[in-house]
Length: 318
Image (tube, rainbow, N blue to C red; front, side):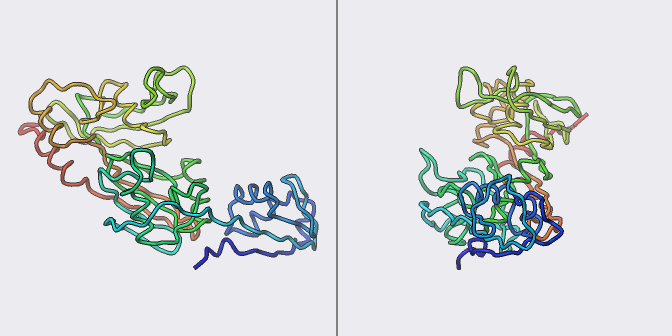
């Protein structure tokens, strides 16, 4: 079935909206379209008022007919592949899943297939949303070796609105991590976030310029040479938790990019057996992008994380 958001829409401007900015009027009258999408379609010449193309500054004319022709979705280039998915929730507009560690989110150099996108296209061939045909429906990412809860859009409208939520940080997101050493019992890391000056694969929180990044950390349990912590994201920068913890001297256990060599035999063995960073996206909460219904999902860490946790538990926490 084609996405209903792709069908042309005709409306008549109400008398009460005469003289208002047309993009604002349309965003209010047509809640199925986000304002950012409407502005983009205006720029592309896909919206007309009284038979004439409009601009973002065009004023609404009472009684005029407005035609909205949404841009069609980009053609897909990723191929469906039968990869199992742990689905927590699904409806016509979105899907929430528990991503396995080791699963790359979308095709990219070095990972052309066997990704979450390939699995999603096999599960639902008509996932829509986003300009990149290699990332249909993707509104946020988890690192390859991070497990946990993700939301994926299935419709163009849901994608637009979920992207806006993430940009506005209007979601609840919490992670569990096993970190080296003893961080403060509760602390907020508020820094600037930027590319590392000497390693383009890494980011840093010590830059003098960059984007604001905020992570709230609380201790959950003291472990052997390490600590189980919960990190609540106020912002969502690339590698944010891993960067904040590493720069604070408490890298995530097993982190191959931001970690450092481990001298303690028990800690080293737990890290090697885990084989990845001990990071799990445990909680994702948000309002449904179309219905407004509050949704909240919480999952336990997978077995490899749990085994590392059990191996490091103290017989006498005191």
